[in-house]
Amino acid sequence: MSQTRFRGVLVPVLTPFRPDLAPDREAFLAHCRWLLGQGADGLAVFGTTSEANSLGLDERVELLDYLIDNGISPDMLMPGTGTCALPDTVRLTQHAVGCGCRGVLMLPPFYYKGVSDDGLFASFSEIIERIGSDALSVYLYHIPPIAQVGISLGLIGRLLDEYPTSIAGLKDSDWSNTLSILTEYPELAIFCGSERFLLDTMRNGGAGTITASANVNPANIKRVFDNWESDESDALQAGITKLRVCFEGRALIPALKAIAADHYESRSWSIVRPPLQSLDDADASTLVAELEQLGFRMGASR
Amino acid sequence: MSQTRFRGVLVPVLTPFRPDLAPDREAFLAHCRWLLGQGADGLAVFGTTSEANSLGLDERVELLDYLIDNGISPDMLMPGTGTCALPDTVRLTQHAVGCGCRGVLMLPPFYYKGVSDDGLFASFSEIIERIGSDALSVYLYHIPPIAQVGISLGLIGRLLDEYPTSIAGLKDSDWSNTLSILTEYPELAIFCGSERFLLDTMRNGGAGTITASANVNPANIKRVFDNWESDESDALQAGITKLRVCFEGRALIPALKAIAADHYESRSWSIVRPPLQSLDDADASTLVAELEQLGFRMGASR
Image (tube, rainbow over all chains, first blue to last red; front, side, top):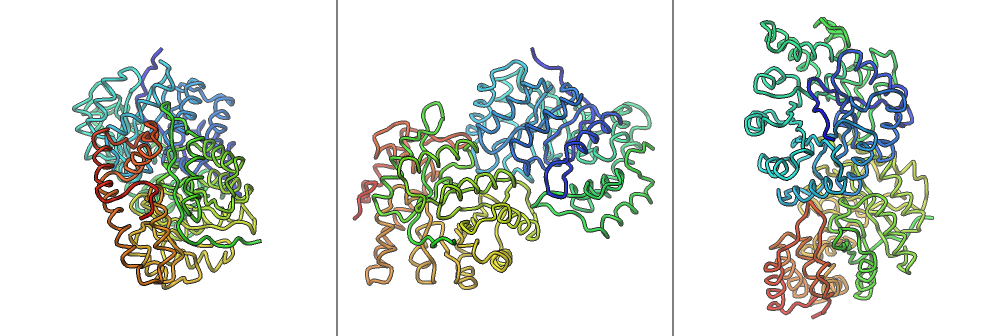
C-alpha cells in the first residue's frame, strides 16, 4: 500500500549528545515531541542537520526504535537512510519501512565522485528492488554542496518512469535547481531545503520545506506554509527570512544547537560530534542576544 | 608494543563481487595470495580502489576475518577503516587492531565539507583515545579529489605531537602535496598514491607506494622499489609510468577489474558495485589488446 505523501514543514531534527558524545535519546525524544507540539508536519530525523552522517548505523536504528517505542507516530517520520554503501542503505531503509515510517530521505552514494547517472540509477534501483515493498516511499535528497554527488533532472525522470509508486518526492538544497524540478515533475512532493524559499516553492506547486532552522523556529515557518495564499504571506516570509539570515551568519548546526541549549537550559545540548565544532561560549551568547534583538525566542510564534 | 612500519609496494586490493553483488570472498582471498606471491609488501584492503566505501560495515569485518582465518598474515594487512561516523570508524579500527593488523589506513570523516583542522584533530584524537592500544598504527589517508576533506600539513604535525607512536605514516594521493610532507615529516612512512611518483618518492625519503595498479602490475612496480638506487631506476620507472597512463585512460577501478577478469578468466571479476559501472565488453577488449601491444600481461614481470 503506497503512503500518503508528506506536505508542509518537516524538521531535520538535531541530534543531542551527552558529554561522552553518545546520543542523548531522552533529549532527542523531548525535542521531537516539542517540534510536533509546535506544528511540525513531519520529522526528517537523521538528515544532514541531524549529524546523521556522524552517527553509527546501530545508533540510527536504536534511536528510531526509541522514538517509536515512546509514542512518536511512524506516520510523522521520514528518516534519512542513504549512505555510501548499498548494504548499509538497504539495512537502514528496510528498518524504517519495517517500522512503518511514512517515507525515507535518501542521499545518493556519496563517496565516489563524478559517477554517472547510469551508476546512480543502478544504485537506487538496486535498493528499491531489494526492499521490494509497496510501503516504501523514497524522497530523493539533492544536496550538492555537501554530498557533492547530486541527483540530476534526467535521473529523477528515469527513476519516476521505473518506480512511479516508490519515488514520492525530493528535497532540494539547491534553489537554483528547484524551479526546474517543480516545473518538470509536478507529480512529485518537492521540498525546498531552506525556508527562505518556502513561499516561492508553494507558489510553484511545491509541497513545503525540510529546513534546519525549523528546529528552533517551527511555528513561524509553519505559519508561512499555512498562509501562503493569504495577503500577509510576503510579510510572513520576510520575517522568517530575516531570522534565517541571522542563523546562517554562523556554522548552522552548531548555531542551532546553541539556541537549543539556551532554550532547554541544558549546556550539553550545544555539543556536536567531530568533525563539527561547537560555538564557543562568547559566540553562542552573542547569537542568542542578536536573536533577542530581532524579537526571536525559540518556539515563540510572533 | 608499537608495530614495525610498512615499507615498499602496498596494494589497495580490488574486491571481487558475484553477479548478485555480494563479495566473492574466495576470489578475494585468491587475489590476495597472488599479490603476495608477486612480491607485494602489504595489502591495503578496503581502500578507495577496493570500493570499500561501497561495502557494508559487516562485510568489511567478515572479509578481514576470512582472509586471516585462511592464512593471510595480519602482519601484511593495512585495512582501510575510516568512515564518516565516529562509532563506525572505531568499530572497524578496533576490529583490525584486535586481529593484529600491522596498520590501518584512515580516511578523515568525509561527509561534512569545509570542516576545520580543530574538528578533524578532535575526530582522529577521539578515535585514537577510544582504541587506546599501543598496537594501533594509523596511516593517514589524504585523497582530496575523492574524499574532498583533506589532511593538512598542520594537522599532521598536531597529530604527531600528540600521538607520536600511533601516527605511523600517510598515503598521499595528491603528488603536489607529497614533497612538502616528505620534507616536513621525515619521521613518517610516506606512500605516494600512484606508482608514477614512486622513484621520486624514494629519492625524497619516502617509504613506497600504495597504488591501484599494483593490483595488476605488482612485480614491475616492486622492481622499481627494489632498484631505486640502481642505474636502471629511471628506465624501470618509465616502464611502469607508461602502463599507468594506459590504465588511467579509462575509469581506473573498472579498468583494473577488466584486466583481472581477463587474467583470472572469470567474467564476474569485472563486476563493480553501483554507483560505479563496469567497462562494456568492447572497451574491456580494447584495453587488454592495447596493453598486450605494450608487452603487458598481468603479473608478468618484464
